[in-house]
Length: 395
Ligand SMILES: Cc1cc2nc3c(=O)[nH]c(=O)nc-3n(C[C@H](O)[C@H](O)[C@H](O)COP(=O)(O)OP(=O)(O)OC[C@H]3O[C@@H](n4cnc5c(N)ncnc54)[C@H](O)[C@@H]3O)c2cc1C
Image (cartoon, rainbow, N blue to C red; front, side, top):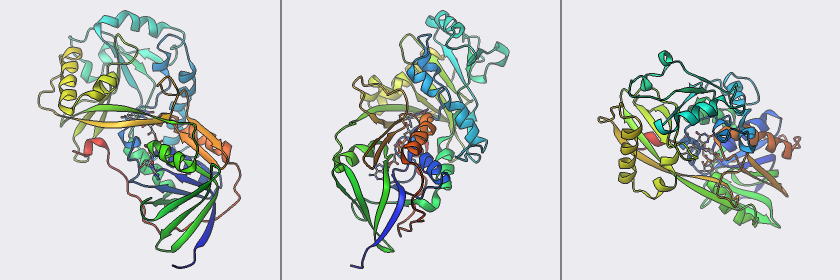
């Protein structure tokens, strides 16, 4: 075997979703030399399965008070809109904003609570009632008896987001296969190096910091390095996808009787130009997760018939998509309040916990890694990863 070459960079980033790619752009822009190692097409995992809602925390203020989770999210819509306007360390000017707001609507049983919630102090200035003559097409029916409120939480297109983030670090991003061309040497809860066998021959990659931003892949990586805490939790979802040629736009959060919205809807366009409603919320959580695909479709049809009887979905194709949210274990089973980024030795353990919180994660990673000590543009001789496929293009 040929003699191995050693390359030194500031930060090696393991992962290929929004967390890895957003942070990679920020670290690169700060002057650091970086390498991004992804084991799959970019965005596969949670990022391309996301609905793309850039939460500002309103839904977490539902008790009428701001809490830690709503505070952590409050700045995110403007951070994202800045990036999409080409301002800031991450340039998302080529990505698509699907809608600059969502509408909040309610089941008939909770109309009065919703009106008082929107009058509450926690919410003022972050939403406004919508006049009936300005209702989006999907709610223009005499059968809808509730009110509609505008929430200033934008919805972005996760596919173009991943594409644009990837473009910013294309030269630094490599496709790795842990079963054949890459191995990680660790000792004393630290990473010593990563060995890569690419077209250039063996390369020993050493970094000041190793950022684990691999979503559900962080758990096995932590085991490999010998870091026992934080532990990882996985929270599954079973989303609905409704596809038809002529679906109107439907970006919404529905308020029901429980603490979680019965449904959250976003609208996307598949690769053949057909419209897709992508449905999450309570229907996709606990009970939804244990249902089979056909049971989940039946549950979805029943829910739409109950809450939106005026919408005709009889000609639509229905299918489902399963995915898992990966986060640090909280003990309560809930999502932690903000992005999680903890440094142990030379290892940074990162889960954004929300697509929306990627800027917060990158800020934390930058603060932990600091100034550049290397200026290597590492050539690893590995293939480059492609952009992954969103769930509505998988069937
Ligand atoms: C159905 C669904 C809907 C959601 N909707 C929203 C929303 O509307 N708004 C919002 O803010 N958040 C949303 N989220 C949460 C959001 O998608 C995630 O918080 C975010 O995408 C996580 O990004 P990530 O980069 O950490 O993980 P991922 O996107 O999962 O990326 C991790 C990547 O690392 C790669 N990887 C794994 N192991 C390794 C390894 N050993 N080596 C190299 N690479 C590895 C994986 O292949 C994967 O591509 C949603 C999540 C789900 C599942």
